[in-house]
Length: 300
Image (cartoon, rainbow, N blue to C red; front, side, top):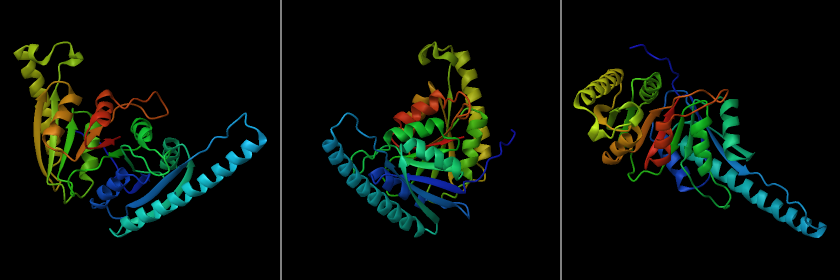
């Protein structure tokens, strides 16, 4: 199988909002031994405040003063947040830079990812900080769709250390990139990587139980071949690796496996064009990002 070239992650853009999801981001990033030279840019986005129209002069003055005070509080909070996060990551020998920007979170993060440029964006699945309007939930969903680089959507783990990851494969170049990206990391705390390949009746016309046995066997053999290829690609990884072949709809089976394995992370390749064209993340990756109960790494 041809090897798809990919760069090891060297520049991370860590978007934080002060929620428990931001704390989970720091825990995950600190728990990975990144390649030598990896740099982290911690970014907090202060929401932009649009002017209110149609107010009297007196009311407008009062509103402007209140908004000015609120903006100062938000900037102070963002500066404190990024500084604390940077100090936390520097304790793990990471080179860290802090940024505070104003605007719409998703747009600002995308702009910064291009300006760096970033090799990986890390963002919480959702979260609410104080002040109340400082939200990154919608941003995570938008970034997973439109970012040009891989995106790691983090959810707080139930365990203190990462123990298991699910790596989805379908034999595509995108799946191969996902495997190479995972192998580029040194993950001493991850004891197991489960490769999941799903045999699917194309188009989903027949329910699983109604698929003829001969077709089921053909589909299963093809899925197993994809899993075997992926296992071969992961030979150089330090983690213990095993594979599972399932039959059904890919997103449903990947999510079910993650639930059964009590996985901490799902790694999936994204299909589609970049933002320069009509981009689609892919139905499977989109559903996994939306419904997974654990963190999800979408690799491009």
